[in-house]
Length: 302
Length: 244
Image (cartoon, each protein chain N blue to C red):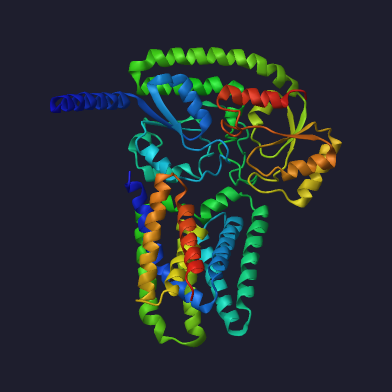
């Protein structure tokens, strides 16, 4: 009886040890946002473990830090951020507290995705007189589906560099993802091409990359300056602009109050919609493909 | 893993040390919301700094605003029968002022919040030591020098020391954590007549902080708000259960 117990104990400990070794072999990736988590999952497959810090429901500019953020970062091999100062309000302090030299900016386990994108809206003056704009340009580049393969490629390169053993796997995962994406893009393009010349009002310039790529015409923002709630004169001006320039749609994000969009819509008769900005921002959107499916669905029938 | 929470715990200890003293004092004087008013005026100072100096001298300017409003409160406390109304209006003035200034500022809310308060979870040890030394100094001042004064001068020193403390701690832990640590343990301690009230407040505060930080880690909740929740909840329960 006792011998059996010992035997079971030994087998168990070997199993536990083995699973630890298995775990240690996997690259541990942490990302700031959900959409990056999904990209890593697509490219890394079962060779990496990945988890995102922020959830998709909240304002990406202001994320409330939780103890798990520090715990996750302190044992990460790779930390991937959006960049362009989108995380400036919360990541630097968390990173400092996690005190993990591998993933500090400039070191090998740190990846800033903004570096791979040609940014829009780089402010010309350094005084930042245009509001709380990001000096490196608009950081919401992931909301143009044409940028996604570029980001996937950057992540693939990084994974190959840090985990050369699994190079072939990452390469083939990336290729199949890129093919699938190209296929999906054909469907989305049918909707997005119709954006050309359509006049819009947006709350925040969250979909600037999408609208620039497909030549929609954003004639105004509900917030007078980024990060500042609308004033009465600004709203009066917007109502005039919406009426005089034949605006077709008011675009709202899910994390700011939709009160003003609704008010504008009532005053002008122009429809307003909420567009999801990240995975998890609405229940149905659980990966990147579903995110753009949903954006396209909501923009259908313009 | 626990080292993540050590600095949050140490900071809560440092804050508890001096804020319990102030807490009992403001409860006795019946001017509990002075803290929020002074904190808000410090925020107005930070917004002013953002608008006119681009964020330079933010600490000095917000400190000046805080001490200035402490001076006003001292003055009003001598001649105003309805002091709480005065303090409430000062708070409202500060809130509205911040929004109006920011609507004209080239910088948004984001940057303003950044300037105003960090999260209790993210304060580095070095900052905690700095503020511990500062509060020790204020504590010694209150314990030894402050007693020698009297009348309006004494009152002003009290409010000035209070303003100085609030401005520093709000920047580290946020306005609600500071308020909870200020009022919660002191309020509970004043309900019990045994022992030294200040020591009781410390003990009560430490126990609740340990529970809050533990719960925050276990269920992965925002640490600051967990502390506020438990401190406030404990004080509310004691208040409802225990008669004066």
